[in-house]
Length: 259
Ligand code: ZZB
Image (cartoon, rainbow, N blue to C red; front, side, top):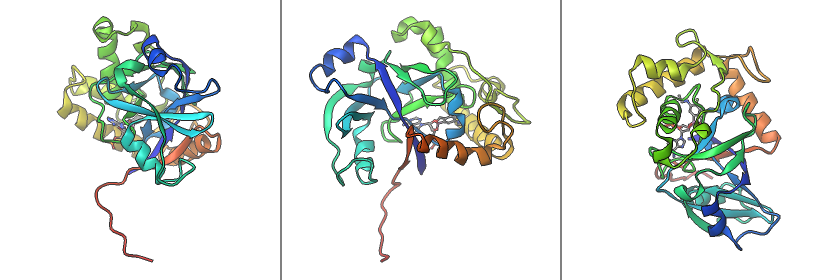
C-alpha cells in the first residue's frame, strides 16, 4: 500500500503532553504529526487530525530539529525507507498515549483551515499506516461520522465542541453524491455512529470509487481537473514543498529472489 505521509507541525501542546515532554526535546525542535493518507487530493478539506486515544505512540528524531509523532511500527518501516538518516535506526525520544495529545494544535498543509486540533478516534487501527489519520469529513464517511459524534459528545470526549465543528468545505464533486460525498453517503446508508462498521466500510468503498472514477476537483490549485489526475499532482506538490513524503506499508511477507 503506497501512502502519502503528511507533516502537520505542532504549534502548541496541551498540558498533559507538555509535562511528559519536558526536557526531552531541544528548544529548536519541530515536531510533526504524520498521518498516512491514500487521498492527498482531499488535503484541502482537513478539519482535524485523529489519534487512537488508547494507542501508544512515539516521538522519533529525524534530524536535530525535526521529529515525527507516529506508531513505533510506522517509525520502524520508515527507517527502512530512507526517512531517517541512518538505515534501520529510528531514535525514540518520548512515548505518549493518544489521549495525552488530544487538543494539540497543528498546522495542516494545504487545508483551508490552517490550524486544526488533534482529536480522538476510537476506530483508528494501531497496525495500519502510521496510527495517525488526518480528517476530511467532506470525503471520508468515517471522518464525517466521527466529527459528528465528537461534536455531539464533546464533554464525554474531553474536548472543546468547536474543535470538532470546523466548517466542512466542498472540494470534490461527483455526479452521484454531489459535493459532500461523505455526508450524502452517511445519510443514505442511515449511519448513526462511528461504530457502524459495516455500512461505514460500504460507504468508504463507494466514496473511493465514485471519487476516483467520476470526481472532479472544485477547490484548490487543480480545480476543474478529474480526481484521478489531481491525485498525483497534489501529492507531488506537497512533496516538493517538503510537507509530505512517500510511505509504503509492507503487506505481509515479501521474499525477494531477484538480483
Ligand atoms: C485522508 C482521507 C480522505 C482518507 C478521504 C480517506 C478518504 P484503507 O482504504 O482502508 O487502506 N487511515 C489511515 N490509517 C488509518 C488507521 N491506522 N486506522 C484507521 N484509518 C486509517 O484506508 C486508508 C485511509 O484510511 C486513509 O486515507 C486514512 O484516511 C484512513 F476523503 O486519509 B484517508 C473514502 C475514503 N476517503
